[in-house]
Image 1 (cartoon, rainbow, N blue to C red):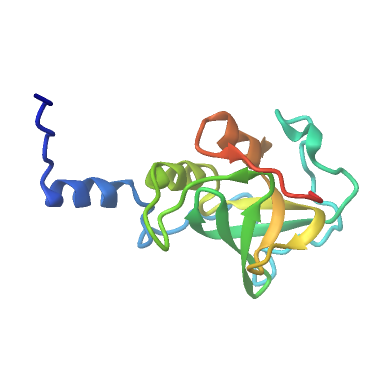
Image 2: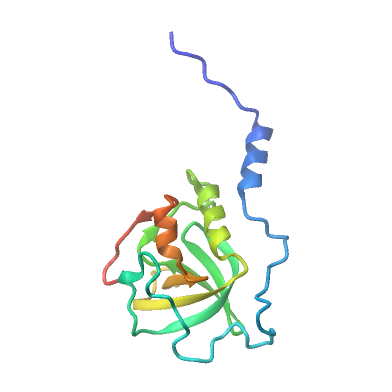
Length: 169
């Protein structure tokens, strides 16, 4: 006779799930190394500094468009929302696929979202373009760097995402 499954109360599952979700009512940490003004989320130089020697960054093109942006929300394990100037834009990481929590909760979604948030939430990032500008949903397709880390690679390396190659990027 098979063993009876252990039932977990719904309230416990909901509480555990909510605890794993990123908090939206917490203040976003700001970069205190420079004064913040209305245009601080936009880098004025055409090529903001990127550490292309970071682990996994050998695949990132070095002579293409780079933009500095502030991460305002983490939407999934492979998607963020950033502020560039006065625009809020959705950015999807190139080369990976990670679970999310919307429109429905995916397996390991809260953990992937939390890992992504730990890397980039409330921080300034450098977005590096490859060949494609946007995906079919209109999200920017970019390689993402923060604090001399290659975020796309870090999520893959830590097991919160899987490699997903879509041509031409």
